[in-house]
Length: 184
Image (tube, rainbow, N blue to C red; front, top):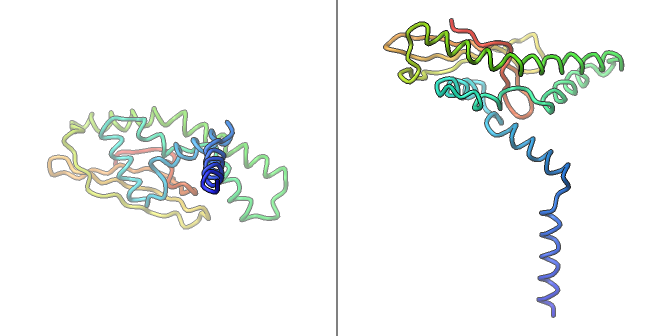
């Protein structure tokens, strides 16, 4: 009898732990999707991951490095925490400007991805033949939220090239693509 009660208790506990509400499951999936690639990478590893997405010409591999809703909330909370005297009207305008930032990053990211891929090819560089060398990070010391530019160094037929990703920022899940990518 004791074994049967213990089994029923274990089964009940397990089933209640497995059953999530729709909202909990959606929230959990959003976190997993958002963290799938960028979670806790160094800015240098982030640069290499972006390089690999470009080399594969796979925009979907770059999507995890774009800001999502949770990232915007993190940035808002970070700003508010660093300015406790911030007025409610400024908090509302801050959220609006961050949402505008998110929208522009997402809307422009595919176009920017395609442009940088094409610019490299226009130089006669064959993507499949390039090799990643390193990436470097230049921190913007003026900002409280950790951010800066990431430089991706790659080699093609003995020549070194650099892709710059400007204004990258670190949020709680990892590094995000900033403004644009440029071939230097």
